[in-house]
Image (cartoon, rainbow, N blue to C red; front, top):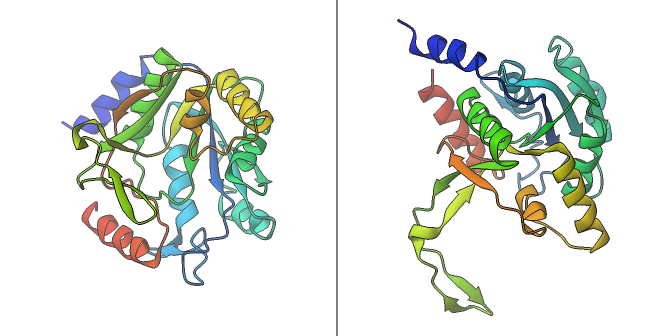
Length: 240
């Protein structure tokens, strides 16, 4: 018996709100040493294709908008032309916040939940997406996370000021999923307040809202440096 198939069939029966995904791939990849990470190949295909395909194949995702740089609009559109959930490929803004806002604006009026994903997380699995979307359906805001392994220090001016209890710390991943109106309102308020938020959960937290944390995946890494790309390749080989 294929447990994965059985699980997928069972979950189809558990309805959630209509969920659209915004995949953000508009960065300059300044830490990649000249490698364009959006188009960097993993086993013969661009990283962005692997990210988008997982959302394409995930039952709880109904439509997808990709946000990218102007020079990649046509190439990414061509790469994803056979993925019917991809409704638009749009140009991003000067910041990640603005890029997310532009992506949300491109989703259809049917969307009740919005999943926001880093394009540079090509090893995301449908199981993580499914968990987060279902949690957001129940709680209004959710994100995947994994426990922090290292001891974290709060440092100011090269001097340790505080050592938080590692048991309370989690490394948050994407997709982060929200009630559509909630995330749009939260990002708008952050813009009005001229507040820079490090992730989309932070915008919601500023409003006093709670974010439900669900189990993430250690393999769901964000490719930021050339070393990350090598690690992603090794993990991909292990996942076969």
